[in-house]
Length: 96
Image (cartoon, rainbow, N blue to C red; front, side, top):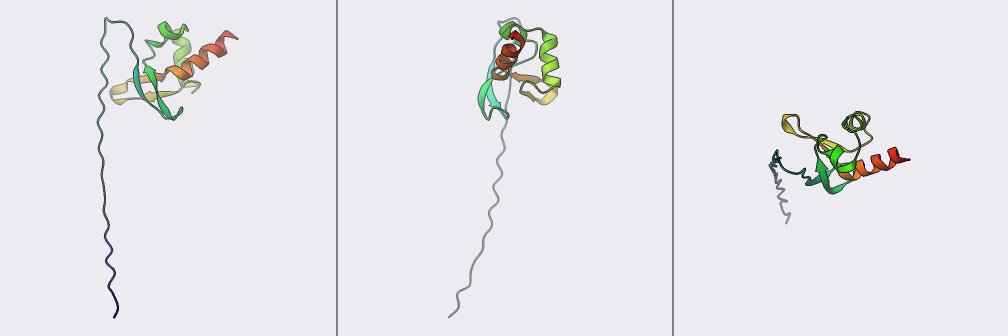
């Protein structure tokens, strides 16, 4: 007696939503999020916050983003976030 084989396919869809809130008028704050380049969760800041944290000029931050010397993530509505770990490496390179 032959048995019939039953094949079932299950499709799972996972949706995620992330909200990022920056408040003005307060000390610069970083947020913890996934950096695809570091492959781990790191502190991220806006390019406007970064100069006060790592001590380099805003121009150096934007130039490093454009040349991909620092890790960054582009969020919805044009928000750019920069990985603090990669900024620390940038500062070390500029200090040499």
